[in-house]
Length: 403
Image (cartoon, rainbow, N blue to C red; front, side, top):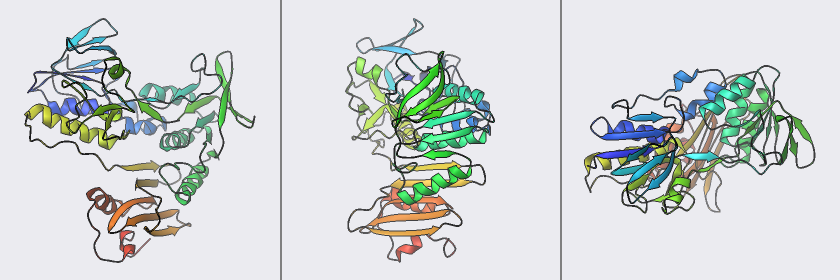
């Protein structure tokens, strides 16, 4: 077992790895944010006012006071000396280095962003973003969310619960169109509208209007301006790979790793949103945690026969609260290919919708909204990639006889 392990990035992947390595390892976790370690998945609950920041704190990492260094930004990796240099002038040596640098929010090419983000404009990626938006959002605040994916839908719901007048501007035909089929996306739209969110689809944001450095609106491609006191840029994320690229590691979309989560340097690993395994960057919590667990086992046992990381079949899940709870789950390929079997059950009155796609004798994708009573069984069947039982396909979607 290598004696000194340095982890760059104190998000969910890095924190999970440090906890799994335990007090028996000499671990240093470098975190750029000054806050205690927290669960990024629950940021929308903080923005909605349902949780305080302390509620989403992650379990502590075992070890001494130097194990977790908060508010420290790594700026350079010296691979020859096996040393990480930090912005505060300090440096730390390693026998093994793990990159868990996560991802950065994508900032769209909007007019008005040339000089940086105007006051009132925020991504929705960190606890600081969340707290800044929460301070702005109150009853009557005009909030515009640019981007209607998973993050934009979460932010819109949370701001509406704060009492803000929310407009969601999305380029696609329906919210969450990367994950959901049109019918399911339409149900998400209806739920948001029931919460008071004004949803604009198939519209393109062209620029930001601001006065004296403070945002006043979002200009659309057709010239229409959405008035705004605050703007959320929820346009996706991209792997944070700058440190790795500057150090000469192989980087494609993310930092390229093998089944041992090893980069092109035999002493450096990568996990989480920054890592690209077998051509895939997941950008989801479940794969990041699975990668952390696999790497912890490899680093602590030193067993060459220890299980390797072979990929994750991740399920996307979202809970929309407000006037009743509305659950969304999607996995695999929700759009069928020619020859696929599709089973669909819908109840417009209750806003319930279930659909699965079967290819041959395998479940390849599905979408569930409203009632997720069958999601556990479906997820297990999909994740295991096992042949489906010889039974009518309708049983995949029914619990207690149906919807």
